[in-house]
Length: 271
Length: 271
Image (tube, rainbow over all chains, first blue to last red; front, top):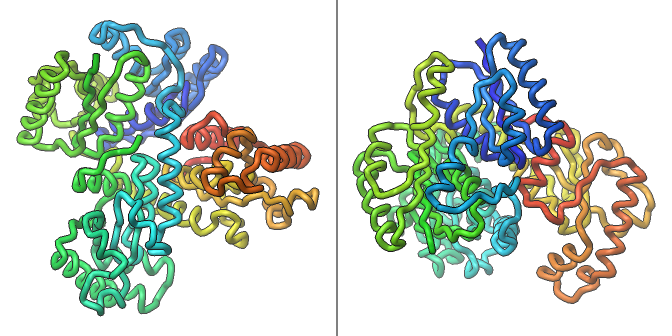
């Protein structure tokens, strides 16, 4: 049986979606049709939403779940008339929080992903630009400015991780691919030596690496399991020899890799 | 008076943080010290956490707020012994959801940002690579594969938006900077013509654009307010003439720009 789950917000819907997904992940056997609806910020849109929820209820023959982060209680009130089971964040927690903080809520809409703090926001964008400009060992002369230098084999996940660290945490992360030449030298690449304390290593199961590389360059030496095994073995040896902290990324998403790096390095977020 | 707010999770903490931030954004006059603590996934870590919360309580002379998304109720139980005000997501909503769904929770930890669905996850990483490879008009021959082509003046926010669309929604977005030469031609750039239905335009207040450009190339013609005004005027004219849908990004964050593009284009997420 299919159940529809709506994530509804007066802003981007990212919070409602994150919350709804984390709760629904606990019910693995149920088939959810997930629908995110951002910017429900007036009564007309809320009434349209009620129709949409009721329609899903009829189609599914069971009432939809609604996860909402709508600040305005009038709009929430309209939604609550729909035939649905409502997980209502603000309705549930805002009042108790007001009492605990002995302060009244400002009931301001769409705050959590807006440019609240312009300085912080600019640091995030600056960090994205830094990650792009210092990607893939392209430039090493700005490593002084980096908060972090990610190293690892080609295609071990460095670039998406640097971008996520920039967007989510405002951290300036450069990345440097460790090549065969670097490994043949039996020492740390010279561009990295002065910045040892900023270096964090990624590693990955050779089988997984070969699969990823094969998508880019099928049937090449670069993508062969033999080559991947060799590189990973040598790279892990270097990490241990040079005492570089490192993480095996095989089973982790970009979000998890990034969070684990933040924890392991003790880096502070810049936002 | 300062209040400490802890966002605690057995996973990345991203959900607890998003939820906590969206609630705390409602109390603008209170100065919160926000601390995210991921991977609290056993009793020992929970007991350390209690000490940390109690210490903050003493320092602040008022009890901290705790927003948690810990699945395991034993671990949650330990945390609840701390001197804190707890906004407990799973404790509040999991039981009612179990009843509504007539199913028991799997109580599986750290699900919401893990590689649950490997196919979807790979599409997101593929989309990131697509955005990088097709950034800044570098290549136009893969526009067939794009879900979206963002156009706009240099530094109007195209690249971070493309990357966010890729990471968050798995959408393959290329971007193309509209240059003065393009504008002099008085017609749509030839690389874009065959893909008109995929094009979305960004615009920005000239003053804001000049500020951003000045950070990169101070006191240049490129960064002058006169040049920015000229480019933006011509670009908006082109959008209207060619009926390209567009958005003014001046007041919006990358998250908001991306969400509004998803709504305006009706693009489906790929994750």
